[in-house]
Figure (cartoon, rainbow, N blue to C red):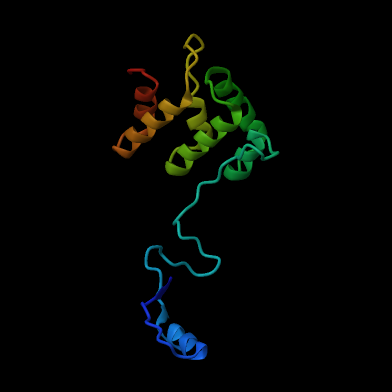
Length: 154
């Protein structure tokens, strides 16, 4: 950031004024943002998302991120999409986020366990996923977090 101290210019020549003005300016490092080496991210980790303008199908995206075959993920995504209000793209983003945060549970299990009973009313996956995250962060295991997030008691 560049700062200039107030300079008093007398009736000196224009050249002298320029020298005085330049002499009163200095550079100061901006300490408000952490610095990162070129090519290095400031964030520790980044979550990959299937952007709205991405031409890949949600199954292909999940397959690329997880290493699982798209053919395995397609029926699970279809079952989730049949119940939740979000688009398949957003459902893919949400389940990927859960799996990245809690990789101890396989992605296909997270997806299968989030499929509600056939007679369950349509709802949003967002609140279910958020409650699951809160419960897992609080120490609950996968099965207990899913059951509580989906309103089931075992």
